[in-house]
Amino acid sequence: MSIKRIRVYPDPILRKKCRKVKNIDDKIIRIAKDLKETMLAAGGVGLAANQIGELSRIITLHIPEEKKPLVLINPEIISKNGTRDVLEGCLSFPGYQGLVKRSVSVSARWLDLNKSLYKVTKEELFAQALEHEIDHLNGILYTDHLLEHEKLKQAGLQDGLNEDQPHSHDVDMKIIAHKEQGEPIEILESRLNFSKLYSDSSISQMQYDLFNEGYLEN
Ligand SMILES: [Zn+2]
Image (cartoon, rainbow, N blue to C red; front, side, top):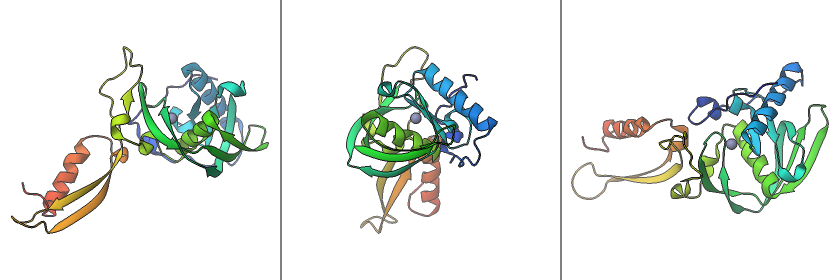
């Protein structure tokens, strides 16, 4: 077992979808143990395999009231109920927290390393962690769920953390294009997926595309 480097945003592996585990073999057991050890060393509530560079559907959870850390293979959410706003953070965005909408309760199933099947319904932190970590396996980050861009705030910023760390948020925007002076002639509505972009240069690219389509003047 060893402690792995936790990948931080914008590492592209965080946007990769993890593959279903077909056999719980020695390799999977090793990844699961590394994941658990890395999560415990970082003091996290949960960690997903792609956060340590492995593309298998494995997460680990350490929910205080559960006492023992858990390994979940091929975890799936079966159903969810209700919504609530919660403050959330992620080991791949060190130093930041944001307000997101999560379910009040979540029913999920998974296998443990002995191939035993678990089916549970959980609330509170356990439910939140299941949604957060299973999102990771699908390449989804909590910043994709931020309620308000402004709410992403630096939490407990300490020396050594990068204050300029990029954050992302999908923004609905409306572009009113004036090809000539006078009445707006076309309104484009689009969703700008900042969460899928890796740098501000993508915004320049968008302006460039709009210009080439004749919507913006040079
Ligand atoms: Zn996370």
